[in-house]
Image (cartoon, rainbow, N blue to C red; front, side, top):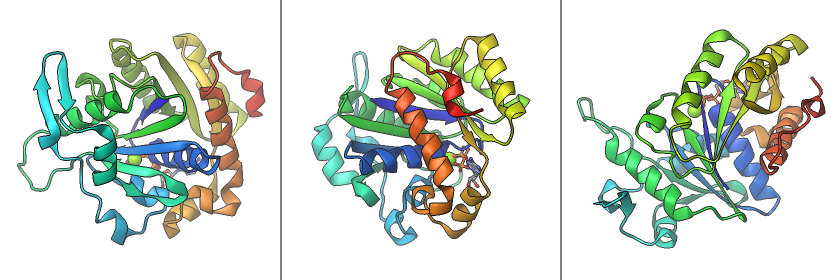
Length: 261
Ligand SMILES: Nc1ncnc2c1ncn2[C@@H]1O[C@H](COP(=O)(O)OP(=O)(O)OP(=O)(O)O)[C@@H](O)[C@H]1O
Ligand SMILES: [Mg+2]
């Protein structure tokens, strides 16, 4: 499955992407994680030390050829993985999109085309999870960067502007050939929080696949630069992400009561 994780700034995209990736890899799934944020930090969230993430170069835009029907990679995807990915803990393979090296550098169109081509060539393999951690911008949709994702996961916090953001993003995704769009509620502090997101999803006919509780332990782990999966006190969050993963593996919406709201 190719899963793109989107949402408003700070909603928890990187936290959820990295936790999904590490948890799936721990249970034996092959995982490719793509940092599609021009301000990258998925590597550290996965547990790579800064000295390692500094070695992570982007998949070069010179590997893209403009061909009929859109951009494409000029090298075999297996070779691209071997040459440009870093191995993160639990065997997660991490690839990165380009980031601006200088001020006044211009647009990132080609870097977006790299992500689109990676997703296309990685294919819809049921035995492999591809997680794309996106930046907080509608550009991944307006540029079609995620056109080859099987599922887009919109992360929402329980407040109006966060929900408005996913509504706008869902409108854009609907114009792409993405098979499924789901919502994950994050930083849920109360039954009222969950209810607000559930009602919003009901009104918009969005598929809500789970709720992740607010946790001071996630904040504490982040402060120490430790991944959530490696922070035992954050276990309730890891378990909630696990329920989201289970729901994503299903074709029908889950009974939301299963999330203990
Ligand atoms: N369930 C949670 N409970 C408490 N804090 C959380 C939770 N999920 C994420 N956070 C915290 O929220 C902050 C933002 O999280 P994260 O970096 O994952 O968001 P993001 O959507 O990737 O942000 P950006 O838009 O900058 O890429 C971090 O400090 C993270 O530790
Ligand atoms: Mg992020």
